[in-house]
Length: 104
Image (tube, rainbow, N blue to C red; front, side, top):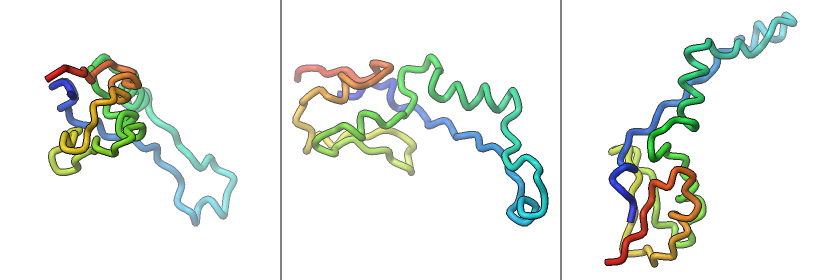
């Protein structure tokens, strides 16, 4: 069973800005402008934060029953318990240990 900790909003990715295509063709200027210090810290905190679930989707990728999905509307991880066979792979691969398997 997914713990309540997984019902967190997904952090938005910070994208670096880059030169438009036309300017790239006419110069040797740096294409990728990179991130500011604040943006880099924000981006790094998506994966390295202390929150229980970082919405990395590893559980969904490795679920053999394909019953774990990300709901774009509610911005939460959802488990279809009608298809889940309780194998525990999701709990085993979760790097933050945000998934608990409980016997019902």
